[in-house]
Image (cartoon, rainbow, N blue to C red; front, side, top):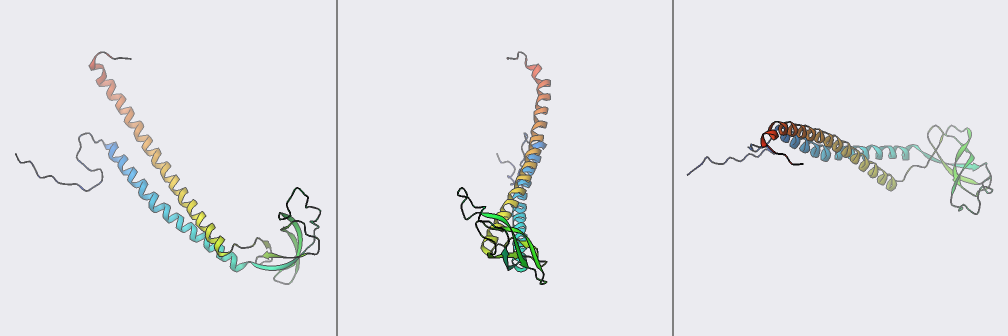
Length: 193
């Protein structure tokens, strides 16, 4: 006895199955879309974030300049035996801005220094005190970490949306099973429990 030739369907979850419900097909597509968006969207967002962070760090290295400053605060009294001498403290310093004017401000310096100590601080093109820009190695690591965190954030958000959609489908299926049980269960006679 010869039957019809079997035709393979290559589409995912598109098999002929009498038990396959519409919700099952929707769930299969949700899972597929979630994984594609996680793989592609997470990768793209991670790469874009890492590239943007790397550009910001490169711009900081290009714009920020070291300048000699003079310590105005006495930090030798601030250092105690309980604090190690390699800690930082906020102190008042004086430096020359790019326009040639003398400026004073507060910045972090090594604790334990005396007034008049010469040190190096960093300023932006306007002469405002800023932190030292990260070197290329540190900037690369920070950009990579930020990119990974962005990719994980997108992955988590997409996964949460997919889990919520699947939960809603499960609730619909459970409600449908309950309605069907109410219709058919009474025909079976004696119930236990």
